[in-house]
Length: 176
Image (cartoon, rainbow, N blue to C red):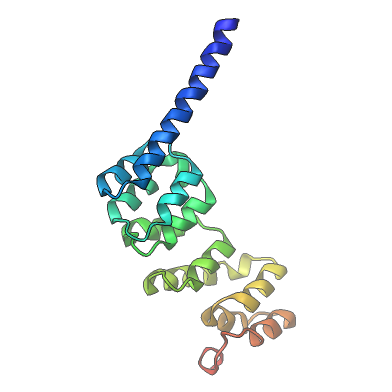
């Protein structure tokens, strides 16, 4: 019985050491080290988010994070990979379909996201409009892009139309 608890402590210690090793790899200026960290089994959500904050990432690192099943399940990491400016389209477009409604809106409104990815996010959202609850449609009408606000002008609910008209991103072109 005592050997089991000792084994548990050793396992926890080895995980802590592995995380410390991954942290050193993440802080490295060398792409190869960051790539090893992105593929590492001990990569946690916080460490993955630390990697994603780097603006000098290469596509291979972002692809490795997207393939790391233990961290890509985390919503923040998923949104971070999709929204990173260096993520290749063949990685970000399939991941885009896994995002929730307001995560898609966040991607569509983020300035650093590539225009074709923003367009894809808006198209996915436009396809979901009929299945969204009234409150979600009102929130999208208020805070969404001009294209979404324009699409919501055709909603059956007057409150959604009013919210779309009050959206600061709504322009004459999106109404006409």
